[in-house]
Image (cartoon, rainbow over all chains, first blue to last red; front, side, top):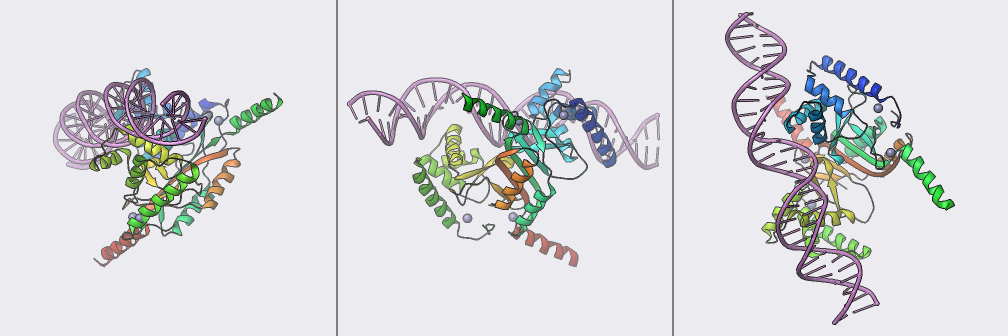
Length: 167
Length: 167
DNA sequence: GGAGGATACGTTATAACATAACGAAACGAA
DNA sequence: TTCGTTTCGTTATGTTATAACGTATCCTCC
Ligand SMILES: [Zn+2]
Ligand SMILES: [Zn+2]
Ligand SMILES: [Zn+2]
Ligand SMILES: [Zn+2]
């Protein structure tokens, strides 16, 4: 699960996500209605967390004006079936690149470019469960959101520092 | 750092937090004003995350009615000096039991009783940094919020299950 | 193919959380 | 005391999320 680069074939990301959603919903006997599919598609417009009200606006631009509950209901559905993750620290939502395979979200957030990626490290998961167990606490769900610099922005910053050093 | 039990000497918790805050602010040359100290005290009224507007209401009951910015400013101060943590998944705030010693919040949240505790496991911290580094991502700040059952609620649930089994 | 329950949706209103902007007051060093 | 800095009060507004209720659609069973 690499960090998304600036120029990758993103339409492929979207297509893969929609296909996976279709399949996962069939498997679960859940109905992926028009609204839900379109909201999922809009969430996938970028690899950045999207707010509910931004989605609402996007819907409007597609000629599908709606009120907040419509979007929140679609988001609730997508969350419930593991097709998206909530990014609590940003009040946003992001598409899950590998639904079906159950996992809490481990999300990397670049403070520079805003891009997000999933970490999805089972060892990390396990370390949390073990560490919590030492306090007698049994884990149900994890929210892990890590801020920092993505590879691209890090490279960029380094080259800027060289510039400053020369100057 | 054990999970807070139902009956512990909580006034001692509050006192310790206030003392630590006093000391930490002196060390940093920061001004722990009346408003700030009182808000900190109110955050510590329980071991559950508290919302800004709940604090606002509490302030009112103390005869110190205020507007939202007053509370948010105090919270910003307390956050900036590591005296409280923000619980993003609950839009709430919780007192930090060991300020000064720099750390991102690793927070355990009981879905049954609402109590919170800090995990503060350096190995976990390190695992995240390492895991992220494998993707070329450099970490700045972590938000770790873990939902589950605290020891007390777990014991309770187990005994309930026994009841059901007998019946 | 119609009856009836379950699921999904539209709509209005409102709750809950957070910040912008500006002036007055308190503080602290010179 | 003077002046700059920090803190605070206040008004207004922005942003995120949900309650409540009726309607439409779907799906199953008869
Ligand atoms: Zn992509
Ligand atoms: Zn970046
Ligand atoms: Zn306590
Ligand atoms: Zn509990």
